[in-house]
Image (cartoon, rainbow, N blue to C red; front, top):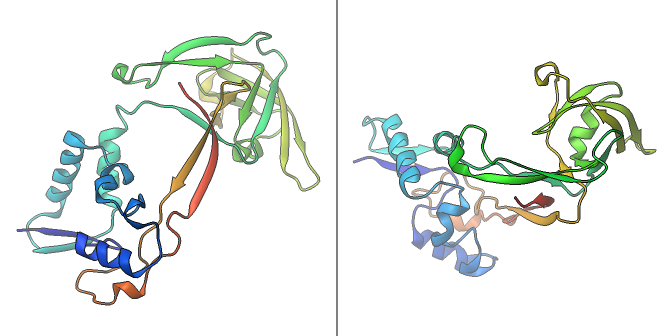
Length: 244
């Protein structure tokens, strides 16, 4: 019999219960604690896909060891291969530092186009995308472009950046450009996701849960209560999310 364990991971509900009673936290309602939320919390596709991920992972391990202690990376990799071909695509932009791109020859009146949620999988359905003269970009994307550069706006076409506006600290605060829909997508280095400037944007909060503990190996260790992590959840990212 093969016993599969993971680093920085509790091995049983008893360990979880002892941990919750001995350290600070939000009790069993904490998303990082509740076993019922374990599968969606780990972004594992449930039912058949989850079963296939685990089966494939066990096949990788072979039968040479009775106990395997491993990182999560392999399971993530297998699960991504199962989800990626069928998962619908949506677009989000970080609210902090977002930059407006003004397209001089963009549509004077917004228009809506229905496109596939996944270009290679029709089963993901369709989404309605609004096209406007002014669009939002992520700060990291805006900082990567330069004046005179041609970029690709995903699901739209190419655009040429004419002007990059920066504040006194060198942070990009605005972009100006023009659509060049005749341009080839293959000729551009940057492929940028974007959101339309519209009142229909919805705020989205992304919560990233850290490990419950800091000790890498818990199995067989009686001192796991001495190394709790105090940073779960540790990251909040505010996004503008175009719900399609």
